[in-house]
Length: 168
Image (tube, rainbow, N blue to C red; front, side, top):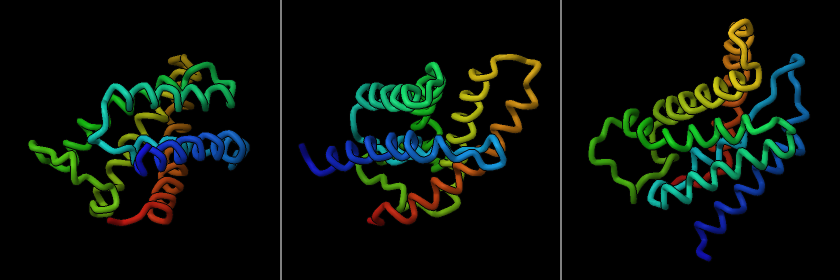
């Protein structure tokens, strides 16, 4: 097992435990809690196998669902953002010949990091809350929860990435 695999495995377990033991118990204003476990998807290397990444992302969401008793909504949302991560990254960087070997999230400018994290976070949260409420009558609740929880998650994610990820 090389260093990259070990660090991704430790990050996976650490983020699931952080989410399950700490962040699921934070309810700011009664309903806001950050979903910091999706940081793992932001930081996973692009040059790795796509099928391995999708399976691991599903397991990440399923692990959070297990601890949250949320019935699979996190697994569905996490799998979806893992699937669309590369096209969104290509659109943000505006490169047709994307360089997979040299990609490092911390090497990007802060505005591109912010746009990347914001886009994936909003999509993730919209799917989570849509599946959780699963009703058109609760559409305003879905949108407001998505918006406010996304802001909280984006702040935690960017702060965590800037503090704990090495710049190469």
